[in-house]
Length: 111
Image 1 (tube, rainbow, N blue to C red):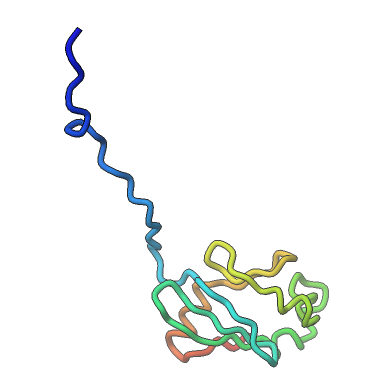
Image 2 (image 1 turned 60 degrees about the horizontal axis):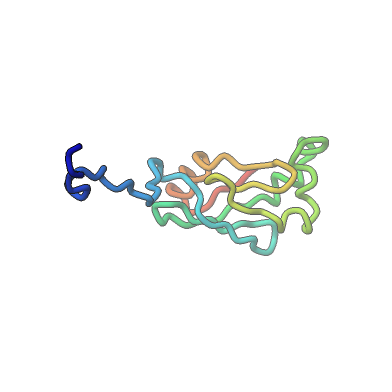
């Protein structure tokens, strides 16, 4: 039986544990603001607001997954889930559309 070779010379390169986002539109932070608004920060540092008052007031929201967000107790539970803004009932916002609007105008106004 041969003696063991130096294991340091035969080591597999370390696996990098830092997650690197491949897309800049992933949301990293959301803060609920007064008047049915959100402040969002994206992985690339872009920051802006989402205005949802008009959208949630519209009759077309009746009976949809977004209707419960009219209740401030529900709306205030916005959180980041897998790079998107989401609420406990499953309602979520498209992060790519949000990112594009915020990069262009600093705000995404949902109508």
